[in-house]
Picture: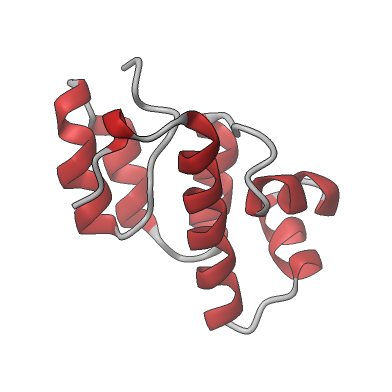
Length: 102
């Protein structure tokens, strides 16, 4: 289980980006393909995958939808307490960054 409270923001963003990239590559999608499906720019997707930006929940919803990962969307929208982050991130196998203040 990932302990988000022990990680700094840069590390969390990098892990999230790595997870998104891994999901994209496993589906044999190019950055252009995923960006188009997500309705975001290739530059934005690149920055997310490289951990250089903290995307909004709406951007993550677009990315997860494009990847066919609706479970992550449901978890993003139902988190109520900060201590739920670890169990949700573990079950989804994707670090969730934007929900810490929910």
